[in-house]
Image (cartoon, rainbow, N blue to C red; front, side):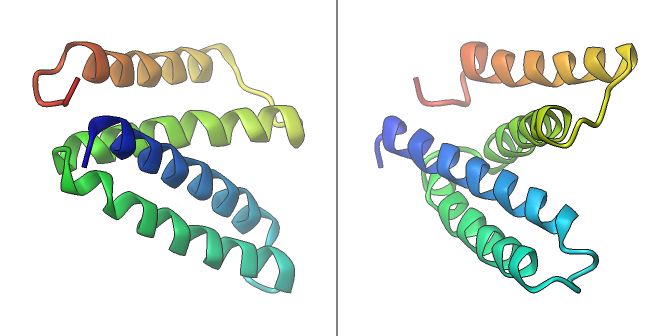
Length: 113
């Protein structure tokens, strides 16, 4: 699998996970049907998409990118869509997560470039 294709599947996994986590937060502990179904389908899709980059990239690196970008994107959705505010330490922490993802992608020799 080409690295471009691996990254496309990784991006799809991240988007599916963000959708699923957002729905999970609205499912009221799986008591609301529509958000519960979206969460289950979204997580299923996320893990299916995630299985493809794992063929071409190191597991730890794939997981670091998936979880790091997922955290940042979910936080952005919660901030903008649900008006959940962040304080300065939270913003700094999210910046550090993004910096870590960038360091892995730009400088790691473990990653296909």
